[in-house]
Image 1 (cartoon, one colour):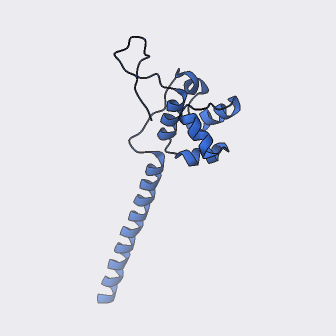
Image 2 (image 1 turned 90 degrees about the vertical axis):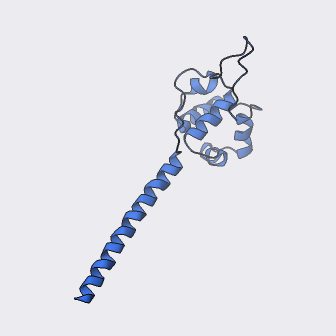
Length: 125
């Protein structure tokens, strides 16, 4: 959804100036949430959040503050793009969590293989 503005028009803001909806999408992507997940956490319908992201409507001030908190950005950045934008990682938080779980399971599997080998050796003695 992030669309850079055309650079050829001198009256067009730079590519870092996105609409409110584009900033919401960018921040949501940076924390690794789907539209449905974020809507549930905000207590709004998915279609409501989709309306905000597509710039068909805007959140009320209380929802904007909640949204900023959930997305780890300032309300000012969401509204006007001033301040620190979210850092978009190569691997969203959900993938990082899954990677940690996989590493833990792999370590457990290796420990089981070692235990099996130890038991086999004790049987052969």
